[in-house]
Image 1 (cartoon, rainbow over the protein chains, first blue to last red):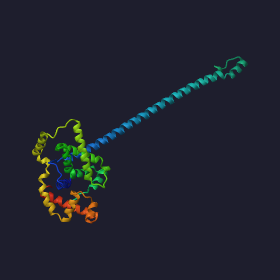
Image 2 (tube, rainbow over the protein chains, first blue to last red; image 1 turned 90 degrees about the horizontal axis):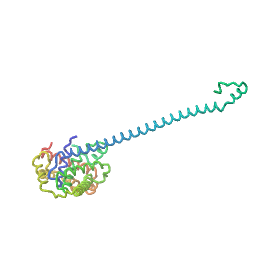
Image 3 (cartoon, rainbow over the protein chains, first blue to last red; image 1 turned 180 degrees about the horizontal axis):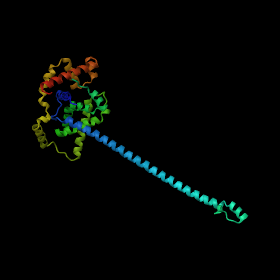
Image 4 (cartoon, rainbow over the protein chains, first blue to last red; image 1 turned 180 degrees about the vertical axis):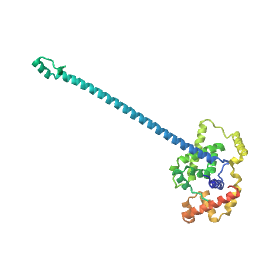
Length: 114
Length: 188
């Protein structure tokens, strides 16, 4: 993107207004543009970094939540199974009406009573 | 020859074409560096401060209101940045006045590498004849807009001509000056 007309116009405006320094580096405008591009790049880099960090945190939270939920479900299932087993045992012990009946009738132990 | 108006260039920059900003830098670099030079009294520092000025202006381009001239806005940024620079320099206890040493360094740079620097004082005498050669109406417009800092609207009212005519005549005057200036100073 080279257009010398703007630089020439700049010189004309400087001379017309008697507003110019003793000398100006010919690479001044290139240096300014380099600076601007660097600034834009660093802004983009910061933005990308922010996005990366935010994504990492998000996935960490989701994973942690998933693991905790899974663990809770697992322990609930185990607990429920245990309760179920205990209930069955209790039921088998408490619900002995058929055994009593059989014992009374025959005095024998029924397999159901074991 | 296409010389875009400042507001056109600004619109291009805002729409994502960063490289267009170079046109504004090239157009105003001499005046802005000189403004900074008046404060810093040192050309190397002046260029550094001017770089900051153009960077700040770019970062705040979206806040620029097109009802004022871009140069006036840039000039205000240059003054504020230069004052900040002086204050920070004082805070850093670098109150040294512009030493002869600094001036010598500047002089050496300009003498050693004349091809790396623009020296406008050598061109002063070439511009006046070009201005004199311009038709009266165009010269008046250049004087009003570029030297006396009138806006298009003010010129339009003062000369009783439509704003469109002011724009097109100014465009023509600039193009004539640029092509003659390039021809005389062998700038291709």
